[in-house]
Image (cartoon, rainbow, N blue to C red; front, side, top):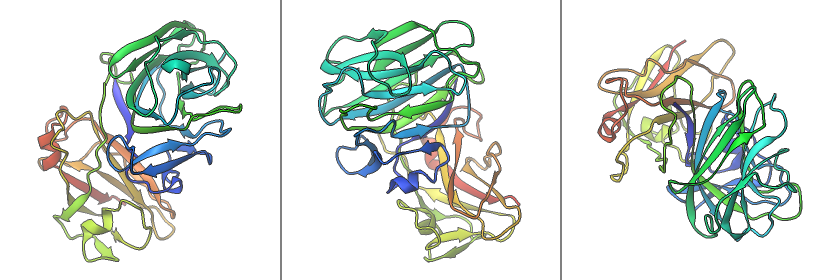
Length: 354
C-alpha cells in the first residue's frame, strides 16, 4: 500500500488558496478554509457549510487503484436529522457503473453505506452501524477502505476511532480503474444539511503491493523553514530566505526566493511536535511560478543525511503560482520509513533543474 496524499489545511487562508492546489478539482461556495476552534490539530481545517451544495470539495490525486483508503477527522456542528441526504465521503470514477459508493451519517449517530448517484438522497442504506457512533460537537477519526472491481463484487469498510463500525461486501459498482475521484460532501440536493468540518485528511491505495491494512488515527503537522544553510538563491521582500518561504498565507510576489539558473537552496525546518511517535510520510507543498516563457523545472523535497530527494519528481513551472506536491514515505538516507529524529534532522531541498 502507498500513502498518496494528505493535508491538514494549514497552508491555506482562503478557499482561493486551496484551489491553487491541483489536487482539488473544484470547491463550490459551500465549503471554505476555517481557522480557530474547533480545529482538530493546528490552526485550520476545512469547513462545509451546506445549503444545496452538490459537493464541497473534489479531491483528484491523479492516481487510480481498485482498493483505496481515506482517513480524516470529522466534526458535526449539529445532530443529523435527515436520514436520506448528507454524505460525508463518496468514491467516483468516470467509468463507474450502477452507482457511486458513499458513506453517510444518519440520525442517531448511525453510519451508513450507500450506493447511488453522486450525493443523492432518497435511497436506502446497504448496511448501517449501531447508533451513537458519530455525535455532534466532537471530533472523530473516520477511516474508509473501498474496493471497486471490474467484474466482481466490491466492498466498503468503515472504522471510527480505530474500531470497525460497519462493512458491506457486495457492492455492485464496477470500474476498471477503481475510484479516481473523491468527494468530501457537506450536503446534498435537497433542503437540509448539517455543517461539518474536516481535518487531517489522507489518502492511500494498494499500488506497489504489500499488505492492505489501515493507517489509523494521525495528525498532519506543518513544518516551516526557520533558517537557511545555503545562499544560492536570491531573496526578495525580506532579508531572510526562511521568512520568504515560511508563509502561512501565500503572498505571491511580495516575498519569495528565486533562481535564475540551475542551483539548489537548502533550509532548516521547525521540529515535529514532541508527541509524534511514528511518521507515515512527508509531503512538500511548494508554491512556485516562473517569470517568463521557456522551460523551467524544479524539484522540492526533504534531504536527509546528505542524501537529496532523488525520487522527487521534476515539476514544470508555469507563469502563475500553483502548488506542487511531493510525498516521501521513506527517508532517502536509509530507504526505510522516516523517524521523528530523522525528520527533525532533515532539510528542505529546493532545486531549479532547468
